[in-house]
Length: 155
Image 1 (cartoon, rainbow, N blue to C red):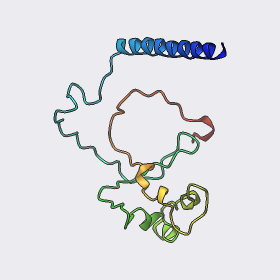
Image 2: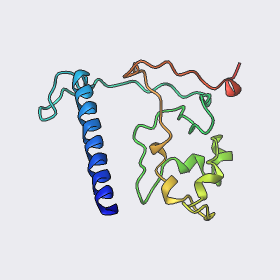
Image 3: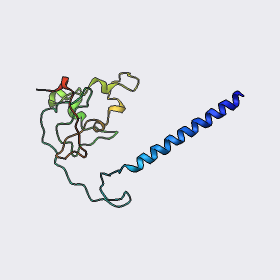
Image 4: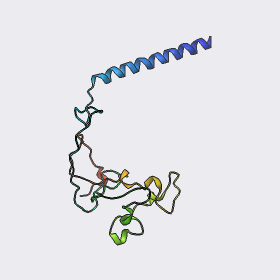
C-alpha cells in the first residue's frame, strides 16, 4: 500500500512539474525577444561594428558599488595579455607601480581559489580585462536605471 502511495505521489508530482513547464513555455511565447544584432539572423554575416573612440587617459574612475573592479581609465589598444606576457603588469605590478605612478594591483590578485597566498599573480586573476574594462564613447546597449551606492559616491 505504501508503494502505491509513493508511486501515485511521484506521478502527481511529475504531472504538476509538467503542467508548470507548459504554463511557463506558453507565457514565454507571448513575450518578444529582441536581439542586439537587430534583424540579422545568427547564421547571416553581420555588418562590422562601429569603431569606438577610447576615452582619453584620466584619473581613476569612481566605483559605483562595493567590490566593483576598478575601470581602466586609459586605452589598452595594442596591449598584449597572454600566458607569457601581461602588459598591465609593466605599470601596475608591485615592483613597478611607484615608478609608473599607476595603481598597484590588489593583494587579492595573489590568492588562489583556496585563498592561499602566492608569490606571483594567481592564474585566475592574471587576465586583467576579464574584470577591468576601459571606457569608450559608446551608448549603453540597454536602458539602465542603476543608482550607485550612496556610501561610496564621491561628492
